[in-house]
Each structure stands twice: as C-alpha cells, then as structure tokens.
Length: 607
Picture 1 (cartoon, one colour):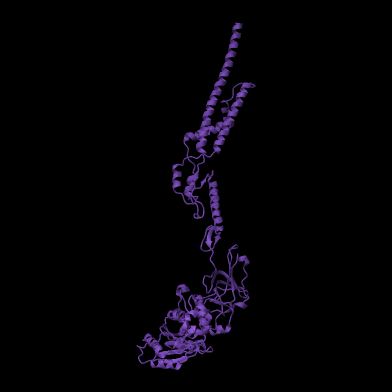
Picture 2 (picture 1 turned 90 degrees about the vertical axis):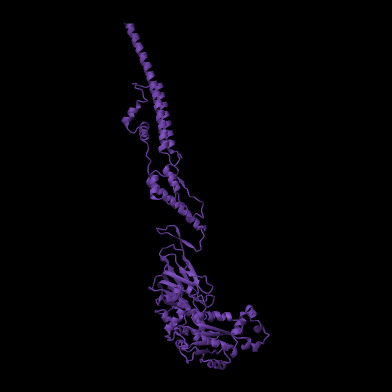
C-alpha cells in the first residue's frame, strides 16, 4: 500500500506538471491568436477612421460646405465596438478591467516565476510594444482614399481661388489636410486667405498688375488689401492749362502759395503738383502754386478760419490788358469754373491787379458774393471743403459745352452778360415787321494797325444800302457798362480782325458780325478767334478777306516781294514777320464794289 501510494503521488505530480505545461501552451496559443486578431482589427479601424482625406477646398467656400467637411462620418456599429474593445486591451484605462485581462497572459502559479515563464512573459511584452508602435505609426500616416459622394459634389463646385488670375500661376485646387476640430478649421482658412491675399499684394507692389491710373491699398474692414484708385488732384493733360480739384479737408496758405489736402488717416500716399493757375501755363511770368496731399492729419497746419463754400485760386496778369485776352484768358474761363456754384465760391487771386478787377467788377460780383482774397499776401490758413486751382477754356474766345460743367455754352455766357449789364435788347431788328425802319450798323474804328483808310467811302456805301451807320472807337477810359449798352443797341457790327470785335459779346442774338480779314493768309486765325465764337454766340457771321490791292503792304513791298507773292512761305519760315507785317503794319482800303455784296447779305439776315 505504501508503495502504491508513493506511485500514485508521483504520478499525480507528473500529471499535474504536464497539465501545467499544456495549460501554459494553450494559453499562449490562445493569446497569440486573439492578439493578432485584435491587432488586425486595430490596424483596419485606424486606417478607416483616422485616415486624413486629401480634400480640395475652393476659395470662397460657403458655411454649408465647411459644415460638410467638419461633420464626423458615422461608422458601422461593429467597428465602433471593436475600437472600444481594442482600447481596453491595449491601453487598460480601468484597473479592474486590466486585472481581468491579465489572465490572458499570466499563469496562475503561486510563488516565484521560473526562468522560462519570465522569458515568455518578456517576449509577450515585446510583442505588445511592437503592436502598439505599429498602431501609432498607422495613426500618423496620411492615407489618400477615393473621395466620397459628398466630396465629388464639392469637387464639381470648385471656385477659382486666385483674384490675380492673369498675373499668378493657376491654383484652382489647393490640397490641404483639414484640421481635427471646427475651430482649427476657421484658423486654417483664415491663414490660407491671408497667404493668398499677401501674395496678391506683393505681386501688385512689384508692378505685375498694370493699370491706367496709380492705385493705393485701402485697409478698411470691408476691402482690406484691395487696390483702390488713387484719384489725381490735378489734370495736366491739356497743353494750354492745368486744372486741379481738391475735395475734402482743403487748406490754403496764400503767402506760401500752397494748397493742401488733409487725408483722414495717416500713411496716405502723397501727391504734389506745381501749377500755374492761368489759362496759358506756357507763359513765363505766371507764379506757380503748389498743390499737395499730405500723408496724414498729423501733418496738417491748424485752421485760422473755416468756411462751408469752396475756393478758387486764379492768377491774373499774363496777356490781360488786351481786350480779347481779358475775356478769352480770364473772364470766360472764370465763368466756366465758378458759375456752377451760383455765387457760393471765393476767389483767391495771385498776381492781383486791382485796376483790372475794378474794370470787370460787375462780372466778379455776379460770380461770387464773397470778397476777393489777395492770395500772395494772405497769411491765414483758410480751410475749405473744396479748392479749385487754375482755369481755362478748350476753345478760343468760346466754350465747349461737352467739356464744361452743366454743359455751359457761349449762349449762356452772353445771357449772363446781358443780366450783369442790364442789356435790354435780346433780338435785332426784323425788317419785315418794321418796314421803313433802318437797321443800325456799328463800324469799329482802329487807331493803330489794320485801320480802314477809306472810312468815308465805307460809311457812304452802307447808308446808300439803307443802314444807319455809327463809327465807334472804343477808348480804354470808357466804362465797360457803357460800351455794353451801346453795342447792344446795334444790329450789325463791322470791323477788321482785332480786339475791337470782342464787343460782339454784347450784340443781341441773331445779330450780324462782319469780320474783315487782312491780307496774308490769316483766315485760320480770324475763324478761330471770332468766326467760330460768333456762331457759338448764335450770331450771323460774315467774313471778307481783302486782296493784295486792298492792302497797304502792296505799296510798301511791291507785287514781286515774298510777303505779297507767297504769304504761306512766310508763315512757314518766320512767324515774327507774320506778326510784324500782316498783323502789325498793315492798313486796309476796302474795294467798295467788291465789298458791297457782304452788306447785302447782312440785310438778308435781318429780314
């Protein structure tokens, strides 16, 4: 019995050892099998759920499109549960759960572990670390997948992302990785827009975008970074005169010949012009005025006075003093520039000439109800809502309505003069309505060159045809108001080319102007100076060009001299001779028989 008991005990121990070995083997086999399955699931789940799609975001994407990108995709229920099981096995967040899972890879032996057991346990631990590292690497990888149905719809709605398409390479599709949260998406899009915008600004600053006018960047909240036109303060495109229009916070310092524009914000691009505020800027004796926009309000001189009406800076002098130039160079341009304000404008006069202003004081007072400022001696800082600098007219002794404010014309100007000087007649005589009444003819007598040397014969001819004739030699000491009323009483004006014909301004509309053109091929001057303006004034215009036989130059040079034989060659070679002889030293003896048809034509206009 004792021996049997010993054998039984020995056998039991052997069976127990074999069982333990077999148990450990099966447990290890089961663990490897289960771990590989979980590792496979984990890899697949990470690939499916954590893969970052390469999304094509168009510029200008709306809020609905952003919500589609940010909305998390729903996974099948099986996949979600598998993720939870994997996280429990790999991470072991709860200690009690971890204790349960430890039975999968620990033996139930009590006491100190054998070497083989520790070795197996170390191998299992290494395998778990390898699996964990593989999972982390898979989570970091960006795996491109085929776009879903929603993403394909988004791709069909792509918008051009570049506002500088002509200057920059096409980047209609931008490949980016969307961030993990909606807040990060907003930051990402904001940074993307800033990058695109800054690139456009850099290209613009480098001159890659070409425009007709200079541009500046406006940094307001609505149009940040967008190019805005920098409006020039002055127009210098005309060969005769410059025009400036300073609108905003405009300030003048007359003693310094300065006109400033004060911008609202600092850092504004500056402009600066030197302007001769006269209708013929090529004259040397006109003092320039500086027109300048400052960088910001901090540079502005303090106002000593402020008004709510505009100012107009003009220069006198030049060719003023000549009756025709007084109107052509100053008074007509002044009307064009200031009449639109209906008297609510102040004149700032540089190179002031008080005697000249007194002569035309009625016109100045009709155009402005404010005192005239002597700009050269003005030490104040005057603040205006608008300052205009310089003036001019696009037609000699006339107005081009297509380029004048409010489409002003010479008819408007002559109406203005009739109101200024209280001229009563607005129509010439109508012979059919007044049978037996004589039309009145004014003959302009010149005391210098281009005078009529046979005036009595001319008067006799006109009276024989039925005119009431008056010869007038306008003197500088005669007041303009008196001259205006006198001229307005006539129906026809006759005179040689010269400043005296300027008085046609005061003729009633539909009256007749007869211009006698001296010898020397100066018809183009006669037409430009009086012919076209007369038509613009709504006058009937007649032109008579004298022959060489009617010129005093024939007696001076003879028929074979170039001045008589070839006036065009004289024009082409030397304008000085044209001014000296054809305009300066020539008198006129009208051929009465040749001139008579002109007077008959004048009578026809008055019927």
